[in-house]
Image (cartoon, rainbow, N blue to C red; front, side, top):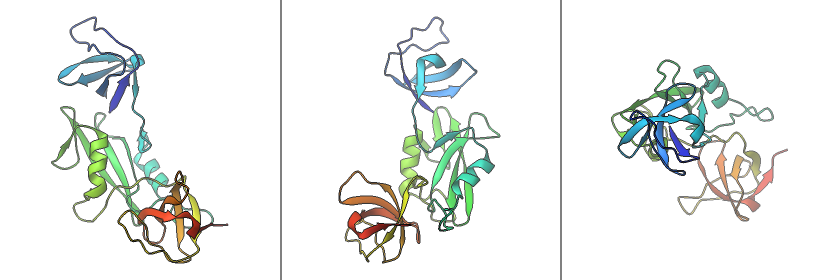
Length: 218
């Protein structure tokens, strides 16, 4: 995991790590009060009260495998469709290996679980090492996380609002999302007045769509 220092800390023994407020470090939980931390090539114990973990919406902490499956396979009560597209994922602590993690990823009607090994302050799923969760996640957004199927990580869209396509729209650019009249569209971001980020519930594809082509699903 990664954390940011809230305050400066001066080590009181050789086993501790000194740092300044605002420093970013990699941490491994140790006990109720301390973590093992690393900044550049320096390592040592870090008081938990001096740091805050970097927040990620996809990191769910110590939820169980069963709870992750329930979350990723939720259905919309009004349509009966899955709330999350294929590739929707979360990362959680491994139930069996305290220092490791698991990536739980929705695919079709099931959830696949990929072990994330944490060794020497590097994260691995297969052979490729990553310096942070962010790097790992960004890599597997464009490279399949599975070796047997094409599965790319996508944001969970549980909080998105459902709309219906009022007209056909054919994407002209890679960033756009094609849709047919009547398609159910889950909108996930609306900061732009003309183009919204969305996912097509029919095929799981994501992109931006013209908001005037959508009507709220009642």
